[in-house]
Amino acid sequence: METFLNKNFKYCPKCKAELDLKSNFASCSQCDFLYYQNPAPCTVLLFHKEGKVLLAKRAIEPMKGYWDVPGGFIDIGETAEKSALREAKEETNLDAKIIKYLGSYPDIYGDTLLPSLIFIYHVEAVNNDYTMMKAQDDVSELVWFDLNDLPQEFAFANVIPAIEMLKISLKNQK
Ligand SMILES: [Zn+2]
Image 1 (cartoon, rainbow, N blue to C red):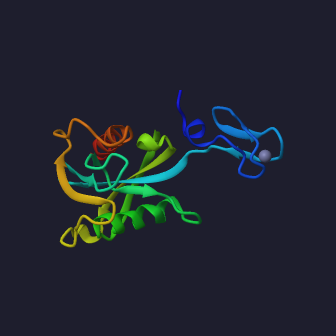
Image 2 (cartoon, rainbow, N blue to C red):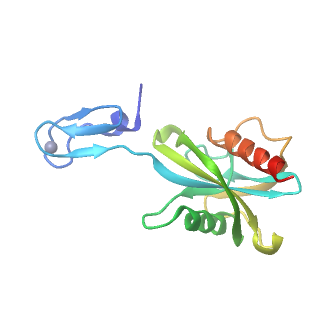
């Protein structure tokens, strides 16, 4: 099976000897180089309003043009919560607040094969004010979709389970 490691790693970056590739790490037979492939942490943001969820069309590869939810990779030194609110601002221009952490989901970042771990947040705009909403950064379009009438296909595997987590959480709130 093709993985991020065997797709991208062949030679040791320190001594240029051939690497020994395992499913989750690469080691060098000639020196002490060892690289563990952990998933890259990401946040996704589920804005919910009146039975609708905000979907974002991807403006960049991988999966350009496919429906997704706002979100992105967590930066070094950043908490998941801070990352979630930064990504909300970058991609939707909204000042958001976290309503609830819903759970996590392991995924793959499209054909880059980079393993990711998605932290899923139910969020809403501060003061429920969506007047400043604007698709920007990695997103070309933002559209409210009825939770029961979603697109057939999404950019990544995490979107449907994330929306299911939101639905369950909303049901339990009632
Ligand atoms: Zn080496």
